Image 1 (spheres, helix red, strand yellow):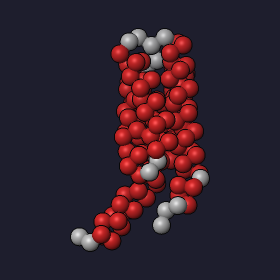
Image 2 (cartoon, rainbow, N blue to C red; image 1 turned 135 degrees about the vertical axis):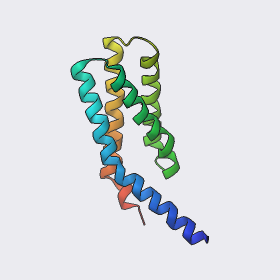
Image 3 (cartoon, rainbow, N blue to C red; image 1 turned 135 degrees about the horizontal axis):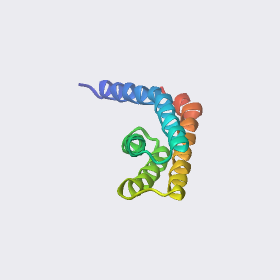
Length: 118
C-alpha cells in the first residue's frame, strides 16, 4: 500500500463519517425530544449516552476537536444521570448539553467541514 492509497483511504473514511453526521444529529434530536416529553427514560438516556460516546471517540480522529469536546461533555453529563436517579433539574441539564451537541453537529454539517474535503 502506498502513501497515496493510505491517504485516499483516510479521506474516504472521513467522507463517510461526515455523510453520517445528519443521521447522528437526527438521532440526538429524536432522543432529546422524547426525553423532554416523557421524562427520564433509562433506555433513551443510555441511547443518548452511547451516541455521544461514539461521537466523542471518533470526532478528533477526523480533525473535529470541538465536536469531540462537546460530545465528551454530553457523555460525562449523562454518565452521572445513568448512575443515579435523575431529577428533573438534572434532566434539564442533560437536555441542554445534548442540544449543544446537536448544534455543534449542525455547525459541522452546514459549514466548512464539507467544504474542506479534497
